[in-house]
Length: 144
Ligand SMILES: *[C@@H]1O[C@H](CO)[C@@H](O)[C@H](O)[C@H]1NC(C)=O
Image (cartoon, rainbow, N blue to C red; front, top):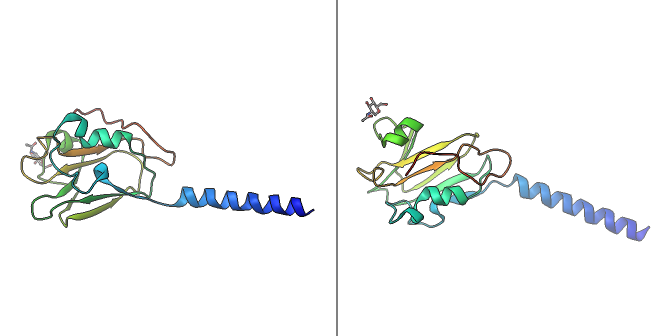
């Protein structure tokens, strides 16, 4: 009887910690470090490489830290992302400490608003399969 009670309590704790783990939204620093929002120095340094290996869930937030005097984060559509078109972004952030919640599944496209930066590869496509399940691969096939 005593051992039955112990194992019942143990199961309950385990289930609760699993639910807790799944329901906790994360803040994810883009690029994994504070100075990552900049022109990548190489292909292996690019943000899409980082994004392809990072895992997200709906409810997680992407966080950018950068110098708001010099740079910005533009959330754009696919066409603007491909063309580095900064004219008409969906959202523009320039406070130097930007947080965007991934509140839906589907691709998210971000480019730098600083002139010439996007063309040099400062952009990030968060791939097509953010979903309730963990996702590994970015399905963005745009190069750069
Ligand atoms: C950029 O986007 C704007 C508005 O969406 C459009 O009017 C303009 O022609 C685009 N510019 C280029 C260079 O594609």
